[in-house]
Length: 463
Ligand SMILES: [Zn+2]
Image 1: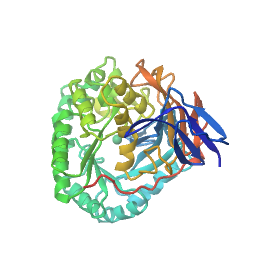
Image 2: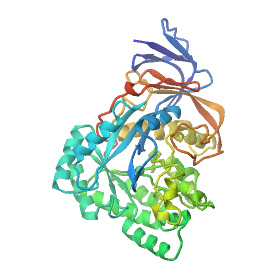
Image 3: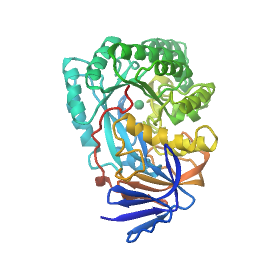
Image 4: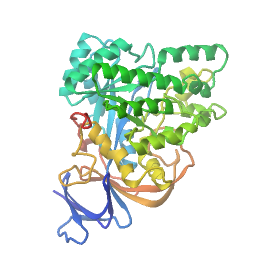
């Protein structure tokens, strides 16, 4: 087994920074050592002086090769996980998508086949339940036994993923029996479809109309309804990609009352806004995702939510579609623009920019990007922490390096960057995935076969 010593750095965990060296043996962290302890016979020493040593990022919301509106998201498991490693993310949890009329277990097999042998970092799955019936409900237990114990449902996208309140209640009751978590895309899709039809009939067809027809009130309403249904079913609830202060308010209220309600937001809602969706010449299509980017005024509430822990996690909802030929499907009709944005590579950096700007603290960065995702989705302490016995998923991060985000330098398989030209401070130097150096000072050294599927345990925050 190879031994790697990461020496001279500042180990940052959710508890705070600590000057310490980290000894890796094989795939695991062997020891976190006080500075000055002499380690002999390390096969390699990584000099981390002046750098942070972080637990690898965990992105619990990605969509690699996802079918959507007749096309597929542009990153495969291979390209998407490689880009993640470049950005200091060492675990993703992707979504297996049940098509109507198919079984959950067959869906899971299909997603295993897509990911198996192709990923550069470890991965797990959530299951999207889009066809609630007796068979599906029974299969949820089999999914849990197979290491998939979080089920995503949609209050949006009627006719595609949409589930009625009754179906949601049934799935929540089923999940609750095992302590599994239901994840919710909370937007009122029925009302939104009416607004979309009205806009198109009135000739309002531009990308910005995507945002204007999905008002934040309808996210707030759906979030509140999801919370109520979860309360009735006594089911843990996790709101995905929360974008609006309206939704945050009802999440905060539910959390204050002691309900098992959790929420994540994404970098695009912290850094981008409706103004980007309104960029001229169809450029706004690059920023079409759902829920949509909001007016800038929501950003302050989201950062505050991260500080107060009403938002516990930052994931990316990475779902890239190329501008050419994919986003362009919606020229002249915003409702045909594939929904989703690239981001898996930049989450750690953008959150570090939040640290640099005084929006969140250094330990909070690690907490929302790694430690809490690990606990929320049953991977802790194997993942999400630098501690003896944990997987050696480690990032050496230079907090002073400058970089400019751009499609010409990123590693995601998509022809634009949502952050083109953005200058930020901080950059990944080295990424280890279970003890193996996969990114090293500007070089990719990983390979697809090295990683494993993570069968996950239950949410560790349940009251
Ligand atoms: Zn998503």
